[in-house]
Image 1 (cartoon, rainbow, N blue to C red):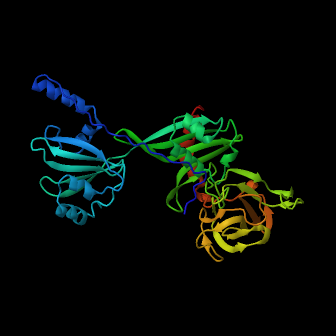
Image 2 (image 1 turned 135 degrees about the vertical axis):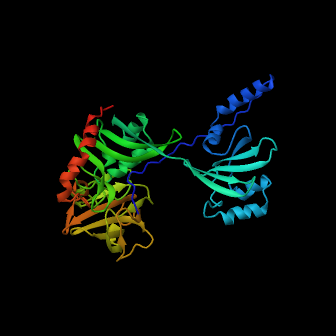
Image 3 (image 1 turned 30 degrees about the vertical axis):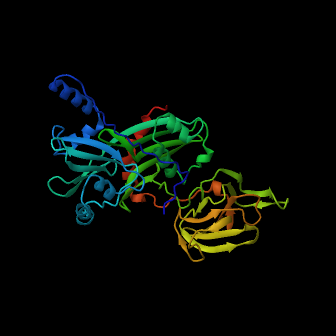
Length: 419
């Protein structure tokens, strides 16, 4: 399971298609030309142009949207398609397209023969890249047309005045790109600690279908300057794993053995301290963890791969989980939990980012929060100041090639002017 740190709502743009119809009281030629000019201004005519076999002279088109609870069977019955044909569509063409896959709000188009006004085709916009064509005129058939996706490489930059999110929006960058950046730096940067004047330069992919933006692709490279320190990340094919991943300027993996935080929190309510006034006992004592204030029920995830060695009630710690991790002699603790995730028990192996519980206020607690602790070789460490090793760095004997391979894109990144 992949943990998405500082999740932002990812949105995609859906373009509605409006069918325009006009008439005029002139000669037949002028009427036809006027109608054609009106139709040509719509996106529906573009569909005809891109789907081989249709001609505006021979067919007319109408458009609708799928209603809540509506099925293809209901739509086709309203178009006088027989039960036998609908059954055949669902049974004989299931390998091409399963007509049960229909979703409220999706657009579909009904096509009629201009001369006979007989229904001939239904085109369903299954996704931004796929159209499903159901044919009824000569013989029953289903065809799936895939529109090619054009990848454009784009560059952007920005200086943060309030938040990373706001900076991206001000620079007209997709909200989905914010989420990708936050996930990429989940192991290294606390985005609740972003400083004014932090800045970024980024090279990324944008996806287009029929010249319309449909979403962002991969980040190719990024330079994030946080508190005056440069954090580079380059997408690169790992020879050891034969998959593309992200690496730092020095060849360390951007993915660390431990996440920077075990949840998406609202604020840090208490930091690591050797002498803190306990909010309930009113005495000074060590607080060897970080308290993350968050609403009750907020998901808590394991910060690294490992084995659950304790899951139960533990005095003032309330409901607690302890995990022995698979690197070094590292143990993490998660205190004051409301409840444990399903299947979490002693002996259970968990992956980095896997949900293990929910924020609560059990034990000695004044409100919902997570007390997160890290122990290395049995000694408590400040989770906010850990120098955690990367998971899979570039091998030493391949680093020279890595430096050469990233040199050009790094130079391009550095040359981007700050906005």
